[in-house]
Length: 240
Image 1 (tube, helix red, strand yellow):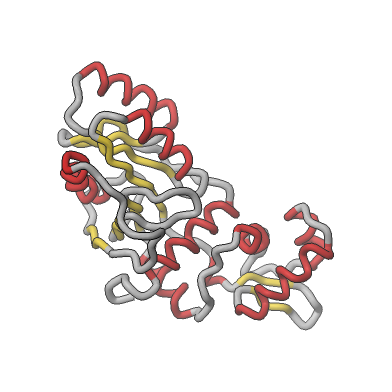
Image 2 (tube, helix red, strand yellow):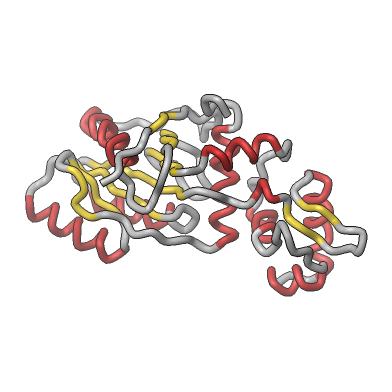
């Protein structure tokens, strides 16, 4: 098993202050770093972000594996975070190397040309989209996500709630991991069965009970999540 370097990055944005968490649950947060360090299917450094405002909810932690280079390129692009889901829906159908016509983009997104025009114009002005001399469009390559994102949720006993939260998070994250407290063997078995059914992860003080599988959400949702991640870390990640 490969153990990777974990760097904790405090988010610069907030949804209105830290949530209240019982002391027992806060103790579970100590499991986040070893879990992040040994996530399967990842390579290189892992950035661990506590309580990052996301498209849906406020996970206890977000782990970004092999994504520091993406964050550096994203910051160097000089494009402000694009947090509107509509913007990400358009950007997700574009390519950095193949320009697409407005008609093709509208068809792939499922919008009318009239609905697409102001969004494309705004994205061009922001520097997220390049318009070719022929009138076609390419996405700025810095906005194409790279790396893997996992949502980690800590629960002392209420693992069912953590699973429900994790399912919501992985609508935009690559997968979720439940950090489980000291519960009995029956609860561990039931939690493991539910998490394994999702292909997600379960981690306790004993290590991995169930390892998450590598997966990908829909491209537009994934891009939406990465833009929130960039917004949360743009000025706080070390050496970015």
